[in-house]
Image (tube, rainbow, N blue to C red; front, side):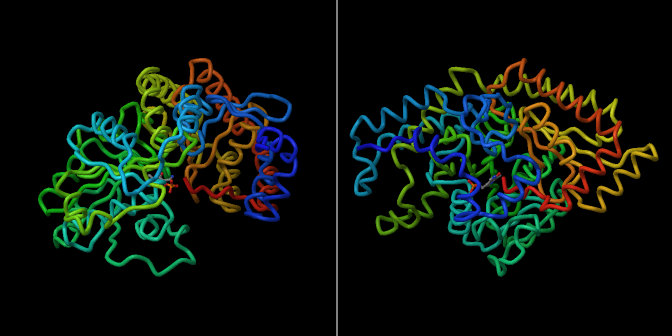
Length: 462
Ligand code: PMP
């Protein structure tokens, strides 16, 4: 008898928080209940989620960016079913997969200055692979990374994480990792000048805080890398495959990295996959002889479901002109938020490109509001964003999240398929909730106290 997944979900879904409290992460359940995010979503389709009553929510998180083409896209669903129906000789290992070959070919068609692909199973694992490739290719130990960087939470990736809160409790880390301020070419010059760095790794737009570099930064960084013999790794796990309105975010600045790391969206959201795109000479240093044909690899890398998830996702991105949609709707939202920033003194900055947008709040000018702000900040440095995020969900059915710990920035990162009607929905909701925050310091304070009394902070790892 086959497993009836829909029936199992329906039968046990009301126990989800109890099951997680008992067998998985109890603290996360406490956070969800405290902030009222224990909605119990029961269905996902495209950019929408549905609760038990069938009410529709606009998801501005898209599973931390994996659902670029939306949840349960019919083309992806059919492609994945067809893999299972085809009786393929998956993961033979002492053979090669045509599907992996074709996915590599299609990815490199979009990034023609790179030559080779290594497939892994996640963003972190792809970052680990890129670090190993860089050390092996250059024979150097050093890795230079940026403050506020996020490249994953496995040990290598954590060693280049620019946020202390993720490291606490896990030392010691990989040796020879050097942090530099993001967007600072002089600091990068000093860090690379000793010619000990195998690689400089950078997110073209940082996910933590949604930090966009100055226009000359990435090109200047690439030039410094060339000057000192360091490889330039672009971590496009979050920004890649159209999120910023270009296939790769580095295209905004005409930068051609030595290594590009992809994951998230390539999976279609449904089958984990990661990809490291590199130059041939780098790859050849790792796989330098028949003896070393398995010098780096993983059991599940190149599995058929993951490869087909990637192929179907690329096809949907192209046929539905999803990158163009991200560019257009992103520009519209950025413009709408910029206009709100002129009207609302609590909005400090609006940043982003395409559908990777950060809305930063900051201390207001007027005295009563400033007092509320200061009190909330003293309670908890992320509290203000919760004052916005909670009513967005409760009153407007919009799911969003803070862009990092200790940060007053909300991250807006929906499926790249959102429509103008969705933009209307989001703009109206943000406008009303932010207006309310300006009107009601007392309500904000009371909500703040309730949150602080509970376990407040929704830890963000994406
Ligand atoms: N790099 C970047 C830029 C990321 O945003 C993330 C995850 N949010 C990772 C790497 C790690 O990916 P994963 O969670 O799949 O390991």
